[in-house]
Amino acid sequence: MNKILIAAVATILSIGTAQADLWSWSKNSKLEEKEGVSAYRVPTLGLDVRVYEWTPEGNPDVTCLMAWGTERPAGLQCFETKPRGAAASE
Image: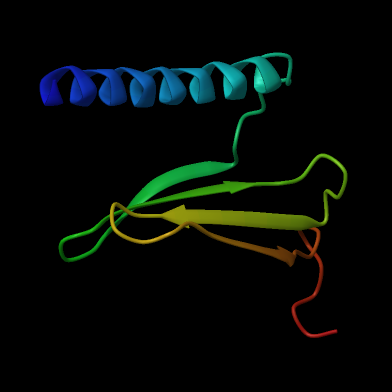
């Protein structure tokens, strides 16, 4: 009886996870894909840190960075950038 109960719980949990992926796909499948400015890995001890940079479509004077690793939550930072050729000391 316990084996049947464990199998039923495992099946229900796996179906729930699959439905979450399907929900995410259905919500995001119609979004237009954009190319990032840059994507790279940061060499760190024991962590696989990946960084993506992009410029938001609605604000071209801003650059955003998103970084995450295998053991830490994601971080997001956006900052204003000066147009190319602008003086550094204004």
